[in-house]
Amino acid sequence: MAELTPEEFLDTVLVPEKQSDHICWNCRGLKPVLKGSKFPPADIIGWCMKVHWPHYWCVADFNVVKKCYAFEAKKKG
Ligand code: SF4
Image (cartoon, rainbow, N blue to C red):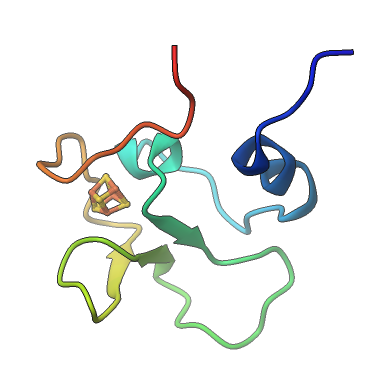
């Protein structure tokens, strides 16, 4: 079995609530809303930890991010 990177491991245990076409899913900056979470507003997929740093930016599900200047791929290669 291939070794997982820390990000790949987290993907196996932190299951997101939503699915969408955002480029953010492949970016190290996204902190997704987790499955079953009752706290966050219903219209976000998660938070971006890079844009507007040191504040988090809510990533709305209706405003699909296709390109981003701050994108950083989770998986190298
Ligand atoms: S840096 Fe850009 S692509 Fe990455 S999570 Fe933030 S908004 Fe999405």
